[in-house]
Image 1: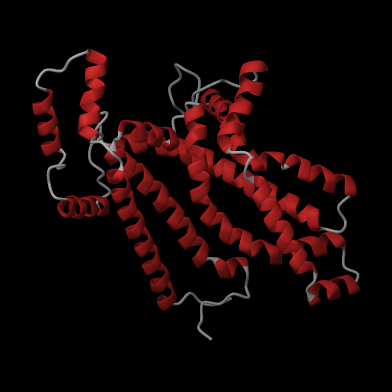
Image 2 (image 1 turned 60 degrees about the vertical axis):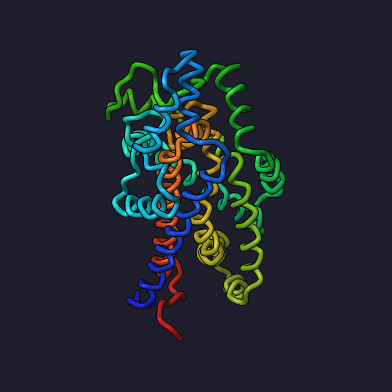
Length: 336
């Protein structure tokens, strides 16, 4: 196994920092390309609710000055980068004086928990079914049933969420319609609360799993077919090794590496698909927060939540990149 060199680590870490900087810059630019002004939109919501807001022009100007929106764009950008280094995302425009950190702190554990469960199930289930599709010893009936089970892969996660919500929550009443836990409960480590969280999180997690595992299955099937033609596979069969041993030790172990790479990269796409799923189920995660922030043009919340999710994805890619030799001993960090 290759030794992790300082040069390699610095190169990968530099790429990580550049990725974070580019992502943070895009997060700052994109909301400002949208028409309208967040302060004006906020006062507009107040007017719609109250019918009239006295001295609205003065209020708008005062809030623009308070949040630094009257400064030039370069000044706003430099201040924004400086705040990101300190993980200070400022105050929410829609829920002032609540800070973005408080909003993220309440929503992040729910999204991380739901994402970890959904991604883990999706990854292992998809790769397992993909291996069965390519393995010669799989019964034909199973090979026919697996593609049928992948029918949901072709539809968006929001449609899968609506379908599951109607069948299992509305029609059969097996699961709750909305929420992350039973109303009135206080978050704790009690069995009752944990059971409630699992009960409420089943349908949101299943919505992500159903539309995602097929991609893993197809990718794993392609890699398994490639591996099956290698010389070491012919040698293993010529030795008369147990077919299950050959499946795990020779085929899956060699085919899984590209899937592990995709695992870290796919975290970002799963999060994007989870945004609308969380909104449909009124789940108290980052997706619901992002959706509400986009609707309210809440720039600080959009920037803070998006940055946290991108940071999580980039960290996952960096960690996977550094532990490659533990997955495949043939990989070395040393230069040839």
